[in-house]
Image (cartoon, rainbow, N blue to C red; front, top):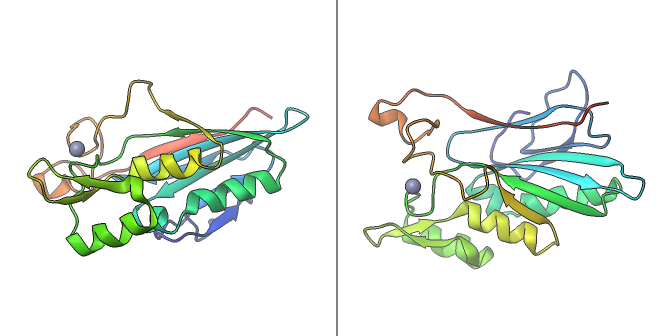
Length: 183
Ligand SMILES: [Zn+2]
């Protein structure tokens, strides 16, 4: 998908690259990808009554979390028959590294209280992974970190791509979150 920090959820269609920040495969058989380098990548699997699988990916940046693109995506999965949903959250810039102006923190926290964070120096920051995780859990989604014991911070971990680290000389690139099921 062409990601633009929107709250648009699109349905996967072969050969089409939609302008969207979440993508749903009603059959689960379209391989879906989300690309990130500090934003939060989320992959989701919805299980239906006849063990049908519906899949989705979400690009959750500040605006996506503030506009709750996660809830829109969950609604699409449910519309396609998902009765229980699991989500996996991948590595992103951590709350202590994502410094923002005070008025921006205030605005986002008003919409999503769980995003409230401060840097190690005590300046305003946002924890987007906590925000989107809370939005999903509020809808009954089972949320897991990729890799189990918590995600490494993309800025602090040199093995990961970080948009913010490029100015420090780290290579530019994106991490991909992928989900599909065998046909
Ligand atoms: Zn960090």
